[in-house]
Image (tube, rainbow, N blue to C red; front, side, top):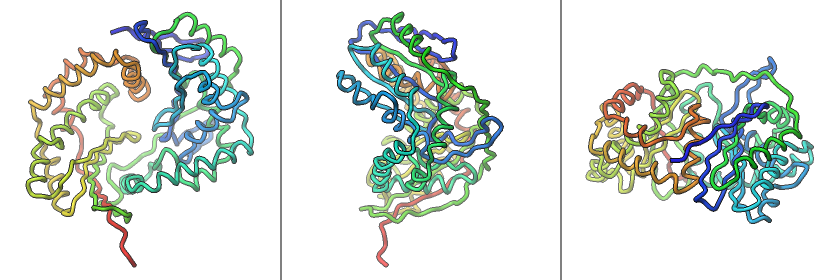
Length: 415
């Protein structure tokens, strides 16, 4: 597997380069370490608790409201595949292209480093974001996810990356300026370039473009919110049109005792563990099907929020209580299946071998390693080969599955 080279500029910007001359395309990605869950900070000795949605609004703003115009349109005319996205921890701006690599790099950097902060621009931008939020509100799982977070967290206030209609409406130009000037700093950003490109040329292009900008330094401290390990509510209900009722058990699990490397391993091990406990071959699934408690698959999600893991298992069911009892029983005394573990290890090894055949498959896990676990290395076959069933048992059994909430989606009742 090709090496990922690291170059750090004098202004603090870190550039990761993954050259593969066999490819026809090049991916350029600039990432800011500020996302939907980035909320509580002390900036220049003043405390701020940002509302949901601000990272997402700023992403739209920088794409559309800069001195040079919407970079999606500019790069699109050059037949580049380009976009921007906000996730829980980061905001990304990227393109995929065969030609005009240096032009694309300059265009994106000019856009995100030359915003035009006016009230008119912000108000014009809000309407399409309102429409995006309204679209999500037609999805029952959007409301169910918020109810789960309300049930789980006493003090952590994150609920949704996009924010609510009211939160977007209340966002001011001063809010955006503060977030931009604080977090869109080279020291808080990284660049990933992968594929077929000229290394010297792209590094020089970035260096020369960055000379055009100055950055005001701020003292920034992310605040640690003292969130209790218990849940707020044990049960919750969503009334929403649904053909069949849905019930989900969500465990709120503290990760305080795990370091970053162990959390990275846990990301893999939870996938194995889910296969052992909820796949079609698992004892839980077979029992639920045999007793006609469910007729479809078990759905599972894993989300990290601050120092907590939310591990959710749910299904469509008419026998809500039976489903919940079986799920709780399974995770009180989990069974670790060696056959499934070895099979998933083999699948992981094959996946990592095949990653180098697809640039996105190669760099996306690497970006996660860097931004989520402060681990600036790609996953390797050797990493997976060193996984053991004993270690997965030790790590999983170190997690506390005693705190959980049960949320159900029921059809709206007529008054």
